[in-house]
Length: 408
Image (cartoon, rainbow, N blue to C red; front, side, top):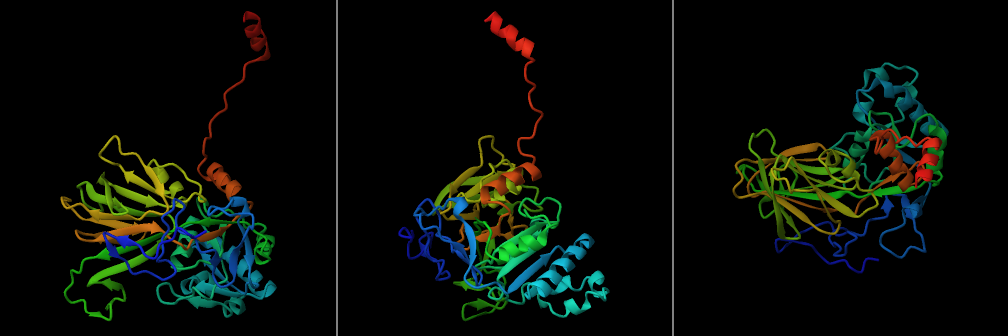
């Protein structure tokens, strides 16, 4: 299954230092061998009849090594309509299932929750955390999201390694990635806890941003800069796990962006336009779709490269194998800098000498399905994007059909 893996990857001939579990990257067309354990207790039930690297989507079933005891509940902030579902869910998880519930600290600071005396006893039982301060990656058995697609993207950003299974309820505006309705949440949550659910493994992008040092005051000690970022030969290096897309754009500049795109060390094109989107199959139905890319099912091992308003009539979006490594840099003749964001977050400026390396991560996000990966995806296309919706062509009246037969 993993016989194609190499011991290390190289960027421009220089070996990169990476996490030991992720340092080996496949050279096959199927992309990295994904980790199939999710959080402390979940994994995908293995199908003994499946010998190919790419599994039949119908065979992807959730199972637990041990019964889950802790759950992270992510709620959309500043949305009053979610307060009642949030309270009902948390009371059910704590009192009916005796589970440990984690929530972000700022969720409990909502005035409507603070002022609810009936919710007070439940509130004291929560375990809280703060983003970018507390590491909860080894304490969460599974995740429940209440809101829109943004809650799932946020959940992904909290786990830079293995991600626990995610159950997403549609309580937002679009809901393409959140298939569950909240009306029957008790029975649906019970099915997940019992391990009776299908999952779709949404691949993520592993992104490494390396920046030239520009602040002479930044002291470097033992390979770490003062802000805690890894360094490579004095350069700042930051790493991200991205579920939807990496967007490189021209920012506030009025000039065209001008960036070079390398694939496995070879220059394949220069993007002149508003920018370029590098997306996962999950992200192919987001910004990339709006920019003209094809919509790709999340089970397809691929990376999409989509230009944003290119200054060329022949620049079409392309799909490349998941196993490749893309590297994006400002062109030497670029008139201005570029800006990059990761799932719409951590936006930062890219200057000459900086680089963005992108490949498929070995840590996918396991999203729990209502039915199965194929049915759920086409249901989302129909309900959220109204894919191929049009008035049906009228059929011929029977008398006209008979007349046509007689004429022939």
